[in-house]
Length: 271
Ligand code: KIV
Image 1: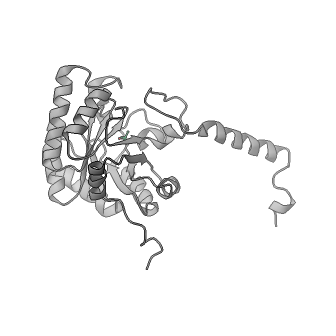
Image 2: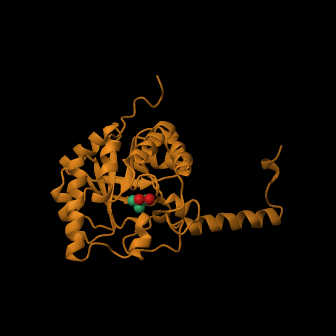
């Protein structure tokens, strides 16, 4: 028996029960084994292997360049660490839009090659065929509406979405369509809090917000943002729980000083 077999895994059914009981869902991103191990042991419910890896891990300006192979590498590392959390993997740009057969084979690669528990895809009515086909293979799907960063060149900016009535109405319809198809949860990114609350209330599945206020069923943040590793990214919705940029800078500078002054290594730190 493995030492981990006593840990009860969070499943999509557990998340549905949490919504029913009014218990909030805590979700964070991770992209590598060491960070995912800390996040999992700390008790997070869901780890998202986000395509934000394109920004925070690879240094690209947008999420568009990251590949399916890249996502599979990150996700497999996270899955090896996560003993309790549900692991959801973002399907990268270009692997599901417009071709549901390709969407299914991309999702199957993610599930087979990483051992993850679900995939996430951005969009509403326009990607329903892909959602349906992926679900038909028994792969749980998480939706993502509002600010969908893979469409950044269509929007032209990262400002709050669905402020006007027409877009808000479309978002509500998309959320219902996704629920009817069978997605197990929906991420709502950067939309007005009142709208997010209305959407969450109208759904029987969890709505997980990022920049969507408190009237949703859970929250998600990018781990590099909430730990303060990134200095440049400061949207209003972000709460920083640490200033790791400063901490790491201090540690690195201390090391440089010790090496240069011959303080490191000392007699106890050698053989
Ligand atoms: O890629 C990502 O990290 C995400 C979250 C911001 C929800 O999609």
